[in-house]
Image (cartoon, rainbow, N blue to C red; front, top):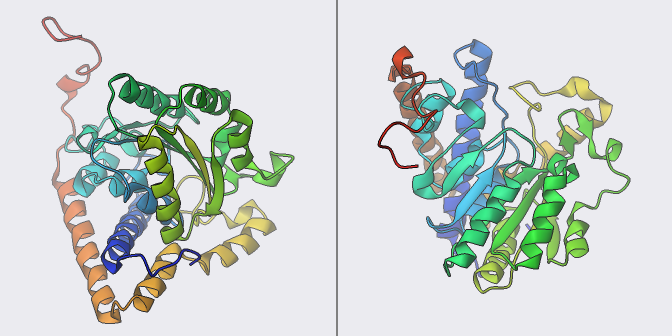
Length: 332
């Protein structure tokens, strides 16, 4: 890992390691459930990208907000979302975080600062800017974080949002999880240059391109950006380079996409962010026995979440039209 570890407390890294492991194990279970036909909602998995959500969210407070897209299981969990409610949502159950109405791509946990994820590419980037604008107008110190993929940087929302955030020095962090693919198209097929982070300079805001698999580096870079935002310095763009192991959607490995992905995947799997963090923890003096105890603990948590999801009831048919319109006497 490229960040100096002398100033990092083992407890902090161990906490981020556990967050990454929780994301990995729940998503591996989800992949199995999709293949078995138990989960029917389309699921975009973040396996291989766990360090970004864990490293960024470790810096955030409950009053800070995050905004995601179609690949946001990791963001939900890293910000403190309830794993039982998330899995129930994937089953379409009433006990889910969106009451079974949203599925994998519409997760919400306002109690911890996640006000929604949507599958429309780049759609929540301006929402994060709006939250930051509200924070500034209220003289609060809350920061908003927008998570999005490399494909979102090719939408107008992205550039309009950076411009507005820069103009008003808003406390928002733009986190691009660059996994090199927009659906099945590699970045080299879509852009003349591989230079997403340079959009920051275009709009007059600080920007960095970093290794998104190095959770310590992600944590430290996000820490500086968040402190900058809280102090009134305005937004920052972070391009975190990473790689999703599974397909654009679903549990498949997508090796049929082309020889380039086949070769690249092998290399990126050798740079597993969880194994990198584990190696660093051992360097910091955490024993293999201690780390070994985390795995069964998380697996037990996943098993309990699955039991909860399976036992939850489906929404009642008579509730179909609820939450669609404002009822008589309800606040608008």
